Image 1 (cartoon, rainbow, N blue to C red):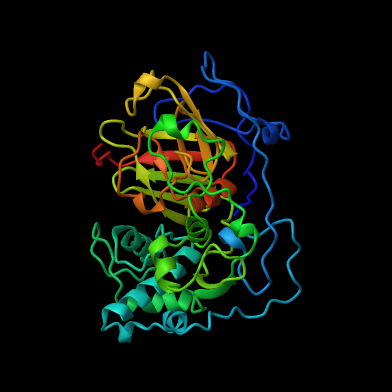
Image 2 (image 1 turned 120 degrees about the horizontal axis):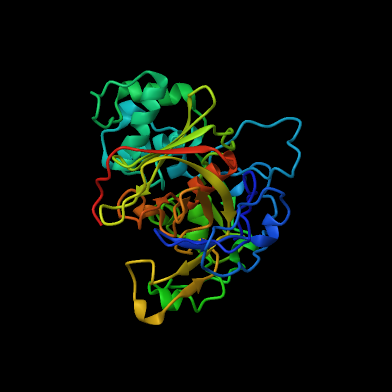
Length: 401
């Protein structure tokens, strides 16, 4: 499966760029050459010129299925009329689409309720991160932000919201459409090549020509913002490796994020907030923000550029993790690259906002100083920012290394 998105603003320049404070990367110079405002070369920078990475458009899915990856193909003209979306006809999916707060008595009913709530939050750009049907911290932070934005919060300041009757009513008022859909696995989904088991050692990652998906299940789960375990649970008898297989998937955000005028990175609660020019919140994302060993920066900086499909350079002379005995290593692009499939470069050297190969760990494990999002959230934010968009780091660093 190949995901497709366009860079926001000017792509990061294909020049030699010095990094290392959190995650070293290199951008796509072929794409950057198409813009007149690429990021400048850092004075005294060390590194290597980037290998061009071509972006590939996917074949659009059938009109009744939401665009893959939650991002519409901007090259296609919208249809004149749109039929109301239909949910999956599979019984379990219909139960999810029909979940109600008053019927949450059993474990299964509560899980269906949480799945529906998480998809609605995702579509409203209050991201719960990976959608898993669990009442976790990322979900509760997303719900807290949604309640604050809609003036329905009942939780005391500083206390994360729980899904109560008032919150559910606000979610239903905002979006009562189906959150499931049927999807037929395509030959494109099965092309790969797939990695199987993704290596963990940098030296082994550096041997691979592309950091693609491990399996078709990982690719499909990321496309629809789902936890792999949830995708399997909704399709217990499906063979995801066979084109033509019909599966139940979720229906996450389809609308692109509106232009962002300002970004806040909150180090104290692992959260990234995007605002429009009037100061209204446009989006909230769960994040992993630095660590006490390698803290994220403080103060106001700005977006320097956006690099889709970044390569990653492990330089033991400037990083404090990994096996230094192998020297500097270059890791090729792909969704399982250490910085994921999008890098948003900042004007503070060596720091950026980027994707992640494992969405389940967002907000749960420390980063090496940078700001880590799910791949789809990083892509959405990358679409919406421009060179010069202010990025303000607030709060106190609390996550331990």
